[in-house]
Image (cartoon, rainbow over all chains, first blue to last red; front, side):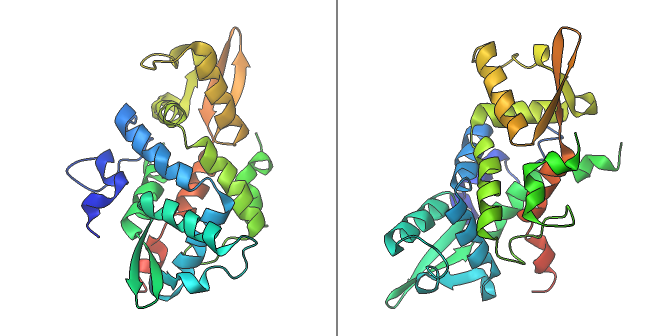
Length: 124
Length: 124
């Protein structure tokens, strides 16, 4: 998956580095894109799924390993994984009978940096 | 406002430091708390408001300065500010006729750290 497919990349151009919101106000367009990504994170099951995938070796997990510990059906898990993938936070790949989901590090890094206020703390 | 009032603080105890989700899977309770905070961030107007307040001197802005550039009514702005305050991302204080909103740095720092995947990159 190329970085160009990540919805977050449009926040700044041409670099993939997002400017922390404390340094520069968000534009209306950037805010719309980011709101979609935060909406994907605004569900407890999706947050836990993301966390479980992130904690797996290689930041990747088979969908067959992702229902354990969740009190929801497999189709519901699949729906949540799709939302995370569409937000650019996960990518997926079919191998044989199973689909594997993988963290998209650039997307998480961009969100983390956007919310990072430590960049200006040294100057206070 | 004490740190104990921040909804995010419950994510880890006794320290206020949140563990990056790449290091440790989120618990169900922590995910519920965090989902509420991300839901507050899942609106473009709220993201821009947060960004504008963060960019003001002292990370604080009078509500009277916060409608400029927004294509929504003042009551709508006030509603969004209330959502951000209830999520622990802003605090507010009345001074004379006006209410001032201020960034809660600890809450943003916790979110940023939660999504930070660089902590494990050095070990790859």
